Image (cartoon, rainbow, N blue to C red; front, side, top):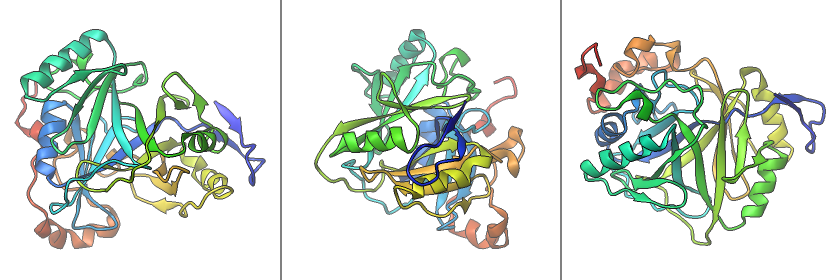
Length: 321
């Protein structure tokens, strides 16, 4: 699904459209509680246990499908002293997960309610909060086509979360942001808002008007990343540079990426599909041990001494599960 760049600046490059969300990254004050909620209750796989490459004493956890695939990944940076944040202008205020059927929605309502999590049905889907107030939603959608649902002994595969359908962002000027999505990022209008639809996946952004500022902290989203084909990342950096101020292309070992602010001030990232989270550990044992990129491996002893031990709940499951 190639599309020719016709924005200001780079007018001759052909790009593959962004293949939906790559990952969403948020902040937690309690990594163990996040593991319990997202891996045990929601059934996502803790597919990577690593650290922030900018602050190596900070846990960086990735929850996703069985392979930690782009399009299914929610990541958390742990700052144990972080106060509770509040979503405001330029911040994601809801992360939307997709399931395949209405029966799955009923399953999740019952599972959440049984765990003491208040779940409400609204016009969009089933909404609830994580223990730190991060607003989540489950909706019936085919956005998750191609996901490999994580195995969980209490969650039937047909009911498992299929990946990220989209995000909702607060904005004081939605029209300007929507124009940027359409003209620069090549999103298209959809029923939910504006959609990145690539070769294998699609994800949406919807803007909700709000004038008040927010405050980052535990239970808030830091950024949303969109999936680029590996060979396109430099071209995306040039395309965005024509209208905004992106970073250079950064090497994150698991992917390469570019960060930038869209017009509502939300922090976006474009990240490459590869090489992915299995580049340094096998699929079977993802998330069991602390993974460090090569540039940090020489500091392993120092880094491990600063982190609280964190176990992967899958270790206690039998092979049959």
